[in-house]
Image (cartoon, rainbow, N blue to C red):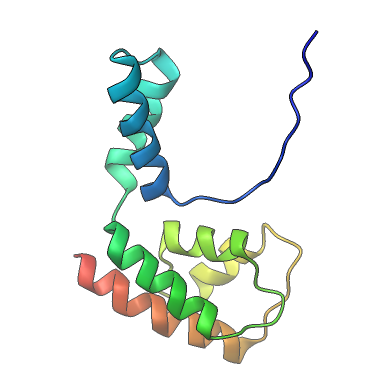
Length: 118
């Protein structure tokens, strides 16, 4: 029996996943049920373009917030929290502590992008 081995792990955003599904659609022509449902979900919730998303990720990385990793940044970009409380709720799912000043910095950066999308 074949045992697959994970070579690397990298979190991807909703927009990146949407692009990967588009590649699969071109290759396979017909999607299975799960991929179809996932595509419907992504079409509803993907809110930023690839360029805007990359710009937001760069700005969040430039803040140099201690203990904030790629997985946290990806989740922030996917959800786009507009308030401090929303961001705290998102970060509660991880074992990370971020002080209030840094949380405010993150929200200020994300707010600009969240307002531009609507």
